[in-house]
Length: 416
Ligand SMILES: [Zn+2]
Image (cartoon, rainbow, N blue to C red):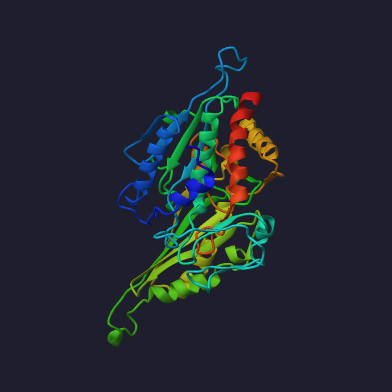
């Protein structure tokens, strides 16, 4: 039975697959395995080969090349991969998701039935107007929807079924991967690129139809630790060193004009993200983001400058700065993958959209995969407003993504 991407999507979002920060297991939550195991079964049902789940939860499968031996490109088309993540963000509930299909969307604000204070407004959602007269999907307003990235999962499954069921659509080997724990930055931690065996891959994890991504932020985490000295406040005079006061002075001096709230496009930022503290010790995690990787050192220097300014105000406190590398702009490692990028651009056009390159102000599984040697740009899904209760999905956009994936597979035959 052929299932549309929408039918698959509506089933997948009802399975709670939320991942969890600071994991002690891999995947971080066992419930992700429910969907991952289901996908193995469904991949077998549609006729994919080698469908399997490994000990980490990675699901992989192959849509084998259907090029006849007489075809001039037979044996010459490299394997191409498509990747989507099954987990949803820890920032909003993903349990008991009740998707509603509004068909057709007639325009105007969308008030969600489970919590009327949650409104998908026309003014904040310019994409809505492209969906008037077409179906859209929302949650009931009490949970996220899970289009990030179950739309990607459904798109890859529907495209795989199309390729497997229509022998006139010629393609080389297509590899599929579904991964856990992307939302906590661990999606590719144990991913075996060699075993996957693709020359180029695509994550299907973007949003607006037509938008394609070959650039992401480069990212470091700065951790400032202030060590003070605690003692009972009643006898603290001249002895207590309150780390919170020093940390507050640091935070007050962090540049405001290069915050996420005040930047866009290619602009970098310094973003105080998580704060913990008591008198004896305070810790601040700061996200450093820049498309230009050497720019991360400039951001680090700005923090060092702030610390140098604050330290003399609190001579008895010790202030430490630690930098942890997170991910790198995939552009730095994309190398000679013009075929992969040409195919996605052309495929988007053949799907009837105007493609546009957009830099991602974040990272994807593809950032890590590209850095590790598997070039992995990203394509759209039709989803919007990820990680919150106003998340919604354009069904038209999702179907355009299915067409785009099928065209990418076929274009690799043309362009190899
Ligand atoms: Zn995602």
